[in-house]
Length: 435
Image (cartoon, rainbow, N blue to C red; front, side):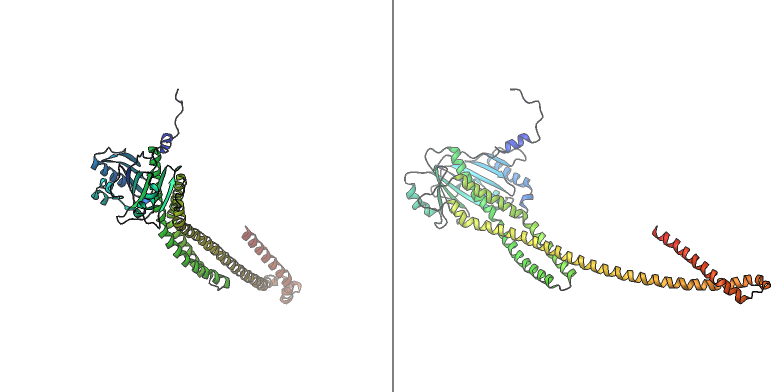
């Protein structure tokens, strides 16, 4: 068939291959596995991933195994007497070694010898979870072993046992850390189960343990957030009560609200990633348990029941802390907006009073100006009449008009002329001010 004469969309092959990048291991009972999840204690999502890759390469070089392609985020291949599966995740990396057969002493951890002690000590991070898996063939005496031998492997109070994947296997785990620092998982495979199906069961059990541990990393953060929210909630209630009483210190109260809002924003920023990651990890744990399709065996506790009783309350605590923080942020914002409105109204009232006082002063100045203008007309008219009398006196004396009568005749027309002149000058000044 001819190829398409079109260019491929960017990353088309990369995105398609991502769906097949992490195949499940193919296992045959009996076998065993050792699983490690390593995470940096701070800013793990922004870590230098090159250090993780270099640590993997150092392990492969120890065993003379082939190296992965530069920049790879997953690897599968032989490692000594076992088979290594390595994955790089957003916050952590996982190493899983599968080996044939089981040790005579259950969960002895002999397979961990493939991880050299000095290599482990140089790991760029800390252990989030370490898990040992023992896979055996389920014989006809399985019920007796579950009631006797398996109980000695786990803590009975926490033990969860169920048939999974159409009863093709029985899984058992207590999700506790033993005296050697490992969690334990036992898988009893029914005869005839496929290697891929058994690999999926083991892989999902390891994922449940890993993502459960990663989700629980949010619990300390949520407790710290809950304490801070309780303190800030009390402060906010006091501020709102003071606002209701109207103490008259709105600017001081607004500063306090802004400080609280900044602290709330800092809490939200610092915990947002952790809360978001917890939700994602919780969803993965729930989905992995669902796909196992558990069935009860002998009235024993299911994995889902264990998580409902132990894991779900911790996740509800995390969700509650996040929701309380979001609610507190909204309340603080509403209180600040209300106080800003009150301050704006009071400032507007003060501005209105200032404008009223300015208007009153302007009216007073106008009346004073009109008074001054009247006095100016009289003064100018007086000097104009005097000048007119001196100027016209010699002219009107021959016709029998003395200076006193002349001054009387000049008063009215002079004052009228001066008044008209002042009005005209004022009109010009007002016209210039409006333009």
